[in-house]
Image (cartoon, rainbow, N blue to C red; front, top):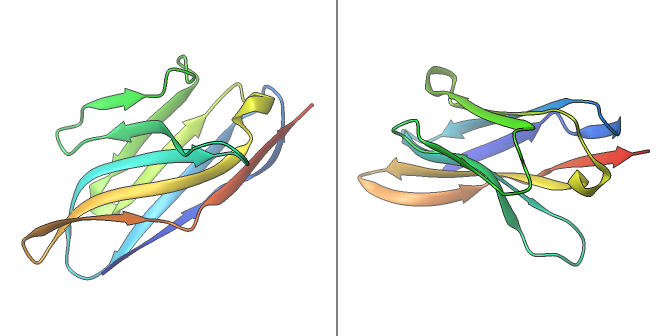
Length: 119
């Protein structure tokens, strides 16, 4: 099994920045696709950003150049730099990982970290 632990969420004012981190740990695994999703009350979970094993990246349409996803495979860590935050970015942010464990590909989710943007 693989555990994902997110950190870096919090309360910030409109226009400010936050950096989210997600650390993967557990059984022997190899990282494949790593991503961030978010969910607000009453809304479906949506893709924020995803970075594949080949380094290719895609973002949700709402990002519009404000966020940057990156990964450090040596540290089994995923990052999301969020700039120019808006009130509509308020949500629970979840880390998602696809990893090969024992020769099979599995998907894992973190518990989430809350981001609240006020003002």
